[in-house]
Image 1 (cartoon, one colour):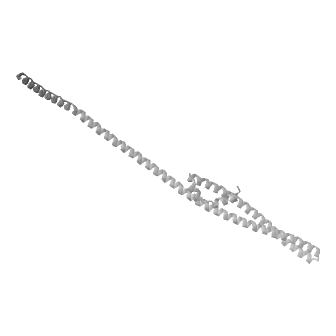
Image 2 (cartoon, one colour; image 1 turned 120 degrees about the vertical axis):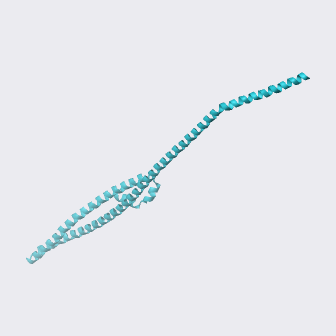
Image 3 (cartoon, rainbow, N blue to C red; image 1 turned 60 degrees about the vertical axis):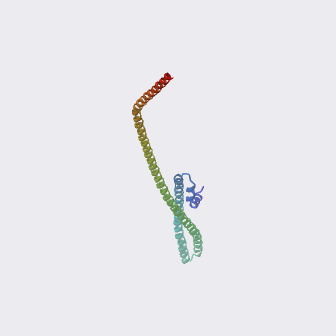
Length: 218
């Protein structure tokens, strides 16, 4: 793709739309910046070449202007000396030099227009590149804030997990104390139960003795 085609593609591109569709906007914007910088280098190189060509044309134009003046002066001298034949030849050469000068002036003007257009294109691309660099800075700052927020959220989550584990340990300790208290009270409960059994056994024996006495009477 030629530098002009690439330039038009870049200038006409909707950067915001491209970034919205990109999976990785930061990577996309870096690629776009690199493409713009490469294109800008080529545009400046092309502009410099045109300026060099115009400078050469301007030097040649100056030489032709001198040549036109010289042939005109020779024609005047020849005419003053009565050499109309030489004056006529000098005027022919002057006309040729004048024609060459006219063509060179047109070529120089054409290069001037191309150089002006190239400088305009360079300015437009530099403006777009500057805008893209600003967007890149915004994206970098947003990404940094997002990473900071994520780190803060991770820290809070870890702290919350630690607090939850702490509460769980506290509950375990409470259960351990309750179980210990229950186990300490269990022998006394068993003793009470044994005495209750003995008392109940005495009642049964007394009732049985009563039945025996009644049986003897009958």
